[in-house]
Length: 347
Ligand SMILES: [Zn+2]
Image (cartoon, rainbow, N blue to C red; front, side, top):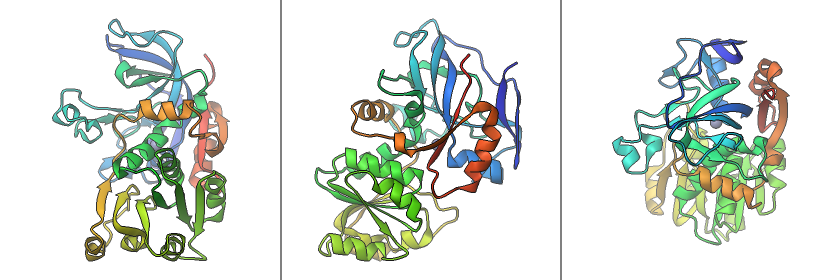
């Protein structure tokens, strides 16, 4: 049996065989996995053994950001064939649920998401996946970029929820991987300029290298002061909160312009105070984001069109055999690392 990266329990990873691949139904495809990105959630399950209500109670294969090659197609699959290069959307809703019927399948209570207990993830040589949630990668999009579509889709969801208008000025608070993805999606979505604030200069240097992005190191200047200076005291049209940090959330009303939008992307670990009256006094529109729905096609189209280049955000690529070392490096959370990827051996 083939080897998978298994989280045995909190703090314990193993490369071992595990019986994880389900049967191929008529509407599924079998995919040889090629590239998998390590996500903050994978790392959190490794270091804490749980995220909110999701607790690792039995060994679980990690990974949910993947690309690969189709090796077998179910009887009823028409849009994919053997040999297609693809990326996979890791959340599988019940297609007949009320949420799915409304087009908001990301908030379907019965969604099954890779590497969210008890569902196995994709750091394994082969996965079986619904064809409807498997997307062909154009020739110009690499497997590495294909595995970046998942985190980028969250930025796409945030940009869509913001209802950006051409020429908007946006601010992203927090330059983690999702903050960076959100900044690039906001720029591609029509913003004239996107400011990104953080404490860590190396992160700001990485995202600040993109044209159209300006950075604010909040060790030197508060985000409120920098945005006021940049907008003549008016504020940002859209503020994307991607830090999950309590002080940033409390300070949101000072950052947005009157009538602007605030999009909550970052997830605070505990409940945090919010300045309701500050939000009301500017009639700010509040949006929230949970994963994404119907974003993969758009994300792939932007990457293929050359309007979004995610390659500079891939900080390191390690072979599958070194995947425990890759996770231990991700745990270090170096300021110079954005995305670490794992490459599966070609079968
Ligand atoms: Zn992820």
